[in-house]
Amino acid sequence: MDAAREKKVVDAVPTGLFIGGKWRAGATGATFNVEDPSTGEAICTVADGTPADATAALDAACAAQAEWAATAPRDRGEILRRTFQLMNDRADDLALLMTLEMGKPLAEARGEVTYGAEFLRWFSEEAVRIDGRWSTNPSGAGRLLTMKQPVGPCLLITPWNFPIAMGTRKIGPAVAAGCTMVVKPAQQTPLSMLMLAEIMTEAGLPAGVLNVVTTTKASDVTGPLFDDARLRKVSFTGSTPIGKKLMEQASKHLLRVSMELGGNAPYLVFADADLDAAVDQAVIAKMRNIGESCVAANRFHVHESVADEFAERLAQKLGSMKVGRGTEPGVEVGPLIDATQRAKVAELVEDAVGKGAKVLTGGEQVGDRGYFYAPTVLSGISDDATLLREEIFGPVAPVKTFAGEEEAITAANDSEFGLVAYVFTSDVKRSLRVVEALEVGMVGLNRGLVSNPAAEFGGVKESGFGREGGREGIDEYLSTKYVAVDL
Ligand code: SIN
Image (cartoon, rainbow, N blue to C red):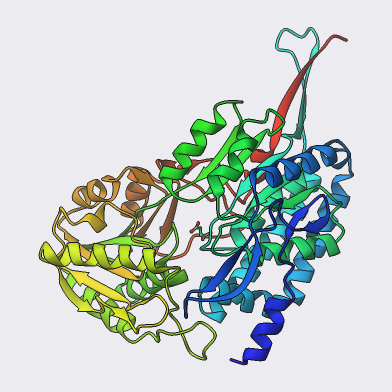
């Protein structure tokens, strides 16, 4: 990849805070480095926001709220639609930027730009479909009027693994609903969000509707916002422990809350499954985003009659994937986000191997530069292996056997998480029985990918609540007001 082009794309990013429609330095003037995880080297610096900056961003969001809520839904939708178009026009640059700050291979980054932009197209269409209800009181006396109104200023906290799509999945419905917002992107990947703010401004988003505060001190900076009664909602995508802390903070002013938290997705392969499809889709379910996704298949439960063949075929596929810097041609597996994440993945593999697992492929870090870890398949997993209980967030596939349907369902549900499960079977009755019995918010039935802007994304149990995308996504940003009407 051309270093001059990389520099040009990075240099085009505004690196200040975006508050009230203006780019500015943080209150202290401090900055922090954004690293390329494939080298560990800094690619640029961005403003390190402070609590005072976050409050200024909320001031701007509050100042813009009433006027923004009163804009025509069609106008809000058109801004989203223009942003969708501009993102697609600039997809190559956005994808390169994302690869540089996050590490995912360029083709996947390009896919995320499309995925992220689609949330804006979807919600541009939803903006004009916010409706209410008019009904007759059951007694016949009087009428009931129900209307939907924007929740108010929101705090949107986005993760590093999908730096654009997890932003547009929140910003799209907030804009469509008529809410203003403060966005705090992840420290590791602020550049894509800063670029998105620039593009949305170009698409006509009024000053103050979207404010972006980058920072290294996430909880210090968001703390004052939770103490401020003007904030009405928080939407968070990230780990369950942080989600729980935010819930506590959100209780102070009883904020509306959407939480998209950790997962521990079981991938069930029954003896009657199409094994070719099960193996091919397993590559997607495991390796999309280098395994750094809350919907990544975390544990493979495979019927004992096909488990060896499944594991060997999966190992062959993962073992032949090209690992390297995401900008290089043909690379399918980029680096993990940082040294901490790679150490955690290595520790989970060591723990499983120490408890008897066999390494069919991988099982080690790759190279001395950057944070690469080899695609790994493990078999013979013992019941007490930690990776059965914890989210791996890396390219590691543990394969465990089961003997019967009940055992498979029990194993799948044996987790405090409940985001997604994958089920492979050719038996229609079994598929419906198993889907009903799974304690999750989403199921991939003979498919290794569920993510889709037109579908409701979200979990149950400790994977959180609220839905992003689909018909329900905009509801998270709307309040219901009922009026008792005396005729
Ligand atoms: C996530 O990992 O947070 C979600 C990824 C997706 O939308 O597919």
